[in-house]
Length: 190
Image 1 (cartoon, helix red, strand yellow):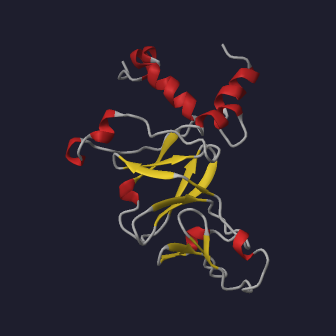
Image 2 (cartoon, one colour):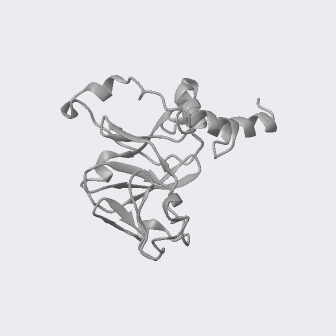
């Protein structure tokens, strides 16, 4: 049996927690590619290990994973427009690309000293095996995508899906490895 302190350590995966920092050093599947079906489609909300993020596909087909809050006034970019290579905030029109770089700042004077420093937190993203994978760890520490067999199969040989499982990721893995519970929890009632 775990102590309350050990349970807290092993089940919290939010930003700044020991297990959260550890898991962020791996590529994580954060969405299905089909959820972003075509360039400039509507963005989707993504919640990964306690972080609310926004995924979108730009005009060239690249996927971005960014903070959902515009750095200007904190407006939710989910209400923005995905257009011409970036996500435009509906509040003041600032537009961001998939790397978080601000492409257009219509309300900032051209000679403003801070103009080129404006950016949106963004994470590296790769598509493989019909999934969108993201790396949430420290910048510059990305590893290669995991070498999973299904990533190399043609789409006709795989089926991808997702489900909402409202629990900690580590608890979900532990539940999947704990085969003893199948004999009790998943049996039909007598």
